[in-house]
Amino acid sequence: MPQTTTTVSLRVNGTPREVPVDNRRTLLDLLREALALTGTKKGCDHGQCGACTVLVDGRRELSCLRLAVSAAGAEVTTIEGVDGGLPEGGRLQDAFTENDALQCGYCTPGQICSALGMLAEADRGWPSVVSADVADDSQLRADLSTEEVRERMSGNLCRCGAYPRIVDAIRQVAGAAESEVAR
Image (cartoon, rainbow, N blue to C red; front, side, top):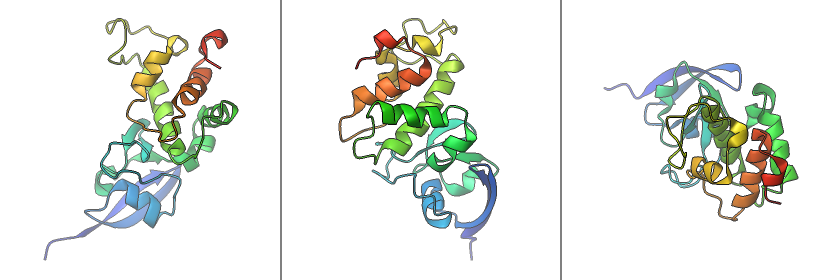
């Protein structure tokens, strides 16, 4: 009989966890059902909406598309862990509140995790498809234009249409010039 479960060891929000999982289970289902971390939302379950975005080893990932067994040994950060575990997590959550970027809030956990990953990508000099000069790796996060933030966050959908305020919140934390942030 084939093996159908594997015990996975990983760190979630800074805490070591060892969880037996069905080999077909996604990381999203592991987080929500086995670890009761329900802040990560199940949206489309096809990687199209971004509601399930978490940070895996500091990079943003769609947890509905990753098998839990493939996350063995990884450091996973969910929305429950961003405030205490990441320097800018609390600042970004505050910026979402200050800019009224929450609306219904269903997509917010994924938006915040994705934004943290996006800012880290910008810090590493990763260009987006709208970057004016993809060879210029000196772009500072403070230079992230509204167009850049929108493109970099395009994998996360908000059905309430809070996009302008989400972009404002991200640009506020990125250090974009106050006069450039639309109010």
